[in-house]
Length: 91
Image (tube, rainbow, N blue to C red):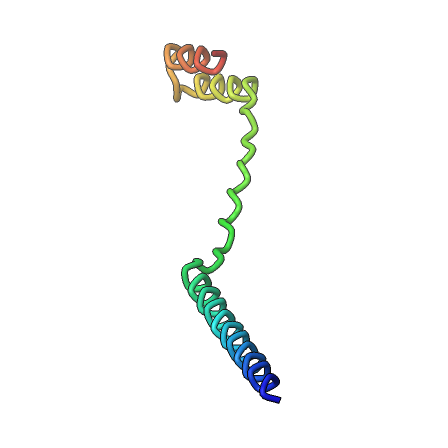
């Protein structure tokens, strides 16, 4: 009977030590998780999409020349101004 007592004590001590280790380990894990959650910045919303490029239709050179000719004929443009703009349009 004397032998059972030390075995029982050893079993109780092992149970207490293992339980304490588990509790301390769980507490440490919870603390690490809370600290990691505080260190992590909150998720940010994605940046707004870039505006779609405005498709500007290339001006029709014929139409531009027609308008220039009308301005020249009305006297709003001189012949020299007309030729300068015509050269710019035709590239």
